[in-house]
Length: 382
Picture 1 (cartoon, one colour):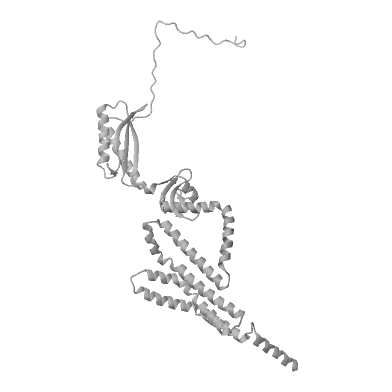
Picture 2 (picture 1 turned 60 degrees about the horizontal axis):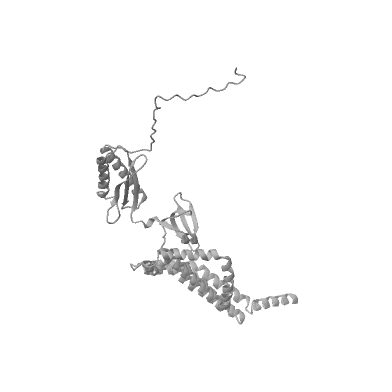
């Protein structure tokens, strides 16, 4: 019986001593408080979000609706913060443990705040959209990404400060490390600067059709920090380093105001002067009277007898269409080709094709015929 009383006394001692001077009963109660808040997290989030959405729907502005959607994930962290706070308050910790508990609560609060700010950058990015009057849309997207990264950096620095970790020496050490890394990552920084130059100079934008000779031709899908994603016309994606696109000549076909047609039309040498004038005037009238083509003085337009080639008389056609869309441009070229064929046939001429004439002169009379000796017979043939 005495041993049993001794064992029970040990149980009581352990119960009262617990952890960090807090009895086990108080610890279990604190865990129960935290568990209750975690169980109420979903209900709390749904209730608060529903109330905020109800208020936002009363206005015609869509900004508040977007902010409510953006704030939904951080709101789920609020019950956890409250649960940890009330649980640690119930424990009534002392000394170092109390300081650690306070730092945990402060860290959770800082995380909630900076997470919320990071999330609402999306709805508020319309303010930065005003900068698209000066900068490109892609450069504004870069600025949004940079702001979000800065928010995360400040949030991390705040949490480190809460735990007594000085950020200054870390930044200084990171600077020395950055110098060493920069020496081995020159291409990375070169591509980063190249991307900034591409966006700053407005060389091309997302959705543009570009051609970099010897590199790629296709449609720009995204401009990243290091490389640009270009989708070729066979639908194959190509990741091109920004430095390569900033250092080479890039043709931006999407920047065209008009699309050119440049032909040389060869007619037969049997075509007389009157027919040539009729053909030239007919082609010029068709272009100048068509709504498909841009006209002078906006763009130059030429239909002229250009040169005498080996097999044809060439007529140069130089004109620009109003559309820059490839499919519509092909249709205009097709109609122009049909019209030129009708004009040439109406004039009584025809299209020339490569040919070569061979002139053979007859042998002069009164001259002896050349003597060709017969082949020599071998011994076996005799």
